[in-house]
Length: 249
Image (cartoon, rainbow, N blue to C red; front, side, top):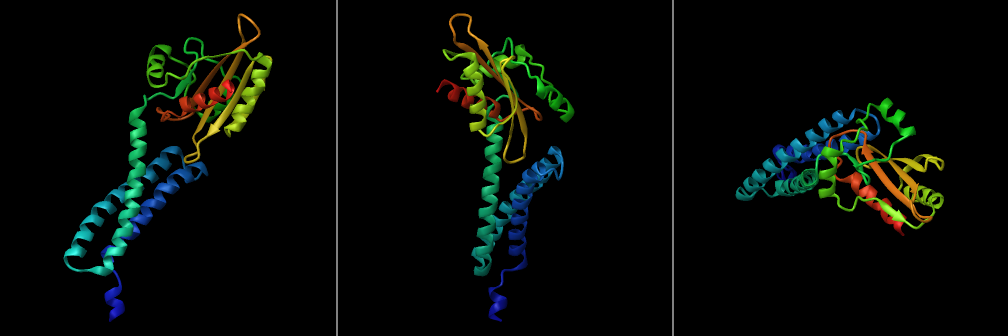
C-alpha cells in the first residue's frame, strides 16, 4: 500500500516522459540532420516537435505542480520539478536561437570587399552539386546591412608578403577547424568549408590575397557564404573576424 502511495500518478509521469521525448527530439533534430537521417527541413520539423512538447510540458508541469501542492500530493512533485527543469532548459535554448535570429540581418553572403567580392573556384561546382544558395553578391542590398551589423568585416592591409600571407591563411583556417579545400598560390586564394556542430550546416569561404599597390605588402579579402538558409545567425561574419584576427597577429 505504501508503494502505491509513493508512486507518482500517471499524469505526472506522462508530463515527465513528454519532456524527455521533447529533449530527445530537439537533440535528434540536429544530430539526425548531420548524420544524414533526414533533410534540413526534416530536422527542423523534428526539433519543432521537441519545442512544442517542451512548451506543453512546461505549461502542464506548472499546473500539475500547483495541483500537487494544494492537494498534498508529495510523490508527484519530484517528477514535475524534473520535467519543468528539462522544459525550461529546452525553451531557454530555443529562445536564445530566436534572439540570435532577430538580432542579425537576414543575410548569409558576407564579404570584406563588397564592390569586388572574392570569387570561389573549386567550391563553385561543389555548391552547384549540393543545390546551395547562389553565389551572386547583390551589393546594393547586402552591403548596407553588412556594414551596419558587422563593421569589423573589412579588408586587411598587411606588410606581409603575399606568398607568406597565403600560407598564413591556410594555417588560420586549419587552426579554426575549417577544412581547406583548395590552395592556389598562382591565384592567391585559399578555399575552405566550415561545418557547424549541431545541424552540420556547411559554410564555404574564400581568402583572396593580392599584392599591395605600393611596397611589398598584401591586401587580404575574405568571403564566407552559407550553402542553405536565409540567415546565418551572424556566423559568417564571426568566422571572417576570427580569420582576420589571426592574420593580423
